[in-house]
Image 1 (cartoon, rainbow, N blue to C red):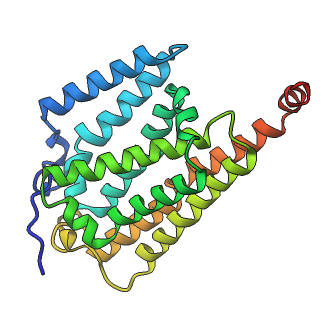
Image 2 (tube, one colour; image 1 turned 180 degrees about the vertical axis):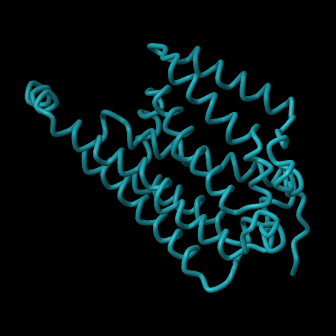
Image 3 (cartoon, rainbow, N blue to C red; image 1 turned 90 degrees about the vertical axis):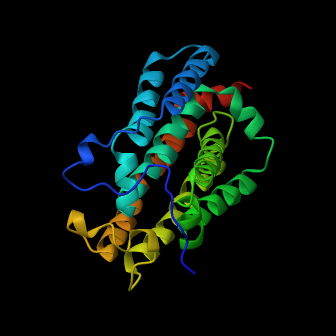
Length: 248
């Protein structure tokens, strides 16, 4: 059964016009500005650099032509999700360290399973088509994806998490994202009906576009989690950390 599509980011642009295809949603702009402002007020101590980076990531992901381009290309959608899940989410978690205490009240294994379920649900054809069927569905996807990612990163980056917890979350997420990336890369045919006729204008077949998305997950999507795993090892095994632990 064919799903009627009404994507929030609008119809697929043509290459000649994509640079002008900025999202003019005033309500979204106001929400981003107010949300970033509230995060800045909630920070202690305040880190202006985090606010600037988060604002830039959100503008690129939701306001820039990337939004419209993601209607045409699944690979652009992959870039969008990488920005939200591995750039915006950890920045929010870093700006709200108190969130780690609340997030840690839930077993990290359950947080990992929830994040994995959300990630896969929206990247498989039925969930993906549903997200492009209208504005409410789109923001349901974005809300679930962002919330589960912030929750995961809050525990992963917490100074109270053990090295085993941080490493387990980082490596486990790399494995499940890598598996999804492998499915997208090695599938013998395109999986996403929404992009069957939108990629050709950009010189790609739907299958190549899908394979590119899978490769992006394997590379750009996994690097932040690899960095987090290495950071966790360095932090927990550094002489200063071991000295503080011995004094407790």
